[in-house]
Length: 251
Image (cartoon, rainbow, N blue to C red; front, side, top):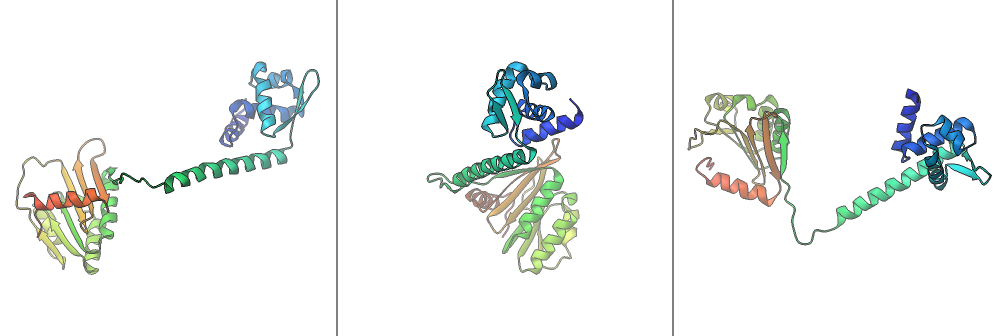
C-alpha cells in the first residue's frame, strides 16, 4: 500500500470508517465493480472479511450489491460518498455534543464541586499568578522569598492593580524582593513575623480578594508546582487559615 493510500485510509478512519472499510471502498473504486475475490486480490483485506465489510459499507450507503453468483459490489460515486459521510459525521457530532450539553446542564443536587487546580512548570505558574493578580479588585497579598519569582509581568501587574485602587501587600523576608517594591508607590512591603528554616522548597503565595489563592513549591522535574483555586469555599477557608497563622499575619 502506497504512502498516499495509507494517508487516505487514515483520513477515512477519521471520518468514522474502519481500516478495512476504507480499504474495500478504495479497492472498489479502482475496480469500478467486483467480487469479494477481486477486492481481496488488490486490497490488504482477507477475503473472508470482505463480505462483512461490504455489508457494513452497504448499510452506510457507500456501495451497492448485485445479487449475482458470485455476489458483486459497486461503490457509489465519489460525490455521493462525500455527501453521505459528511451527513453521517454531522449527525454523530450533533449527537455527541447534545449529550455533553445535557450532562453539563444537569444539577448536582447534593454536592458542590470545589475547583482546585494544579499547575506545573515555572512559566505556567507565573502566567497563572499574573492571571489571578489581574482579576483582583480589592486586595492582593503576594509573597515569595526568591527574587527570580518576581517576574517583570508580575511586577507590572501589581503596579497596575495599585493604580486601579487595589490594596497591594508584598510579603518577603528577602531584602532583594523588598527592594523591588520599596519605591513603588502604593505597595506595602512587609516581613513575615515568623521565620522557618525548613522552607527551602517554598515558592510563592498569591491571595486576591479573599477568594482566590495560589501556593507553589519548588523542585521536581517541573521546577515549580502550584495549586490554585478561585471563587471556592476551599480558597476562602485556606486564606483565613493562612492569615490567622503566625507564619504570615497581614493586617
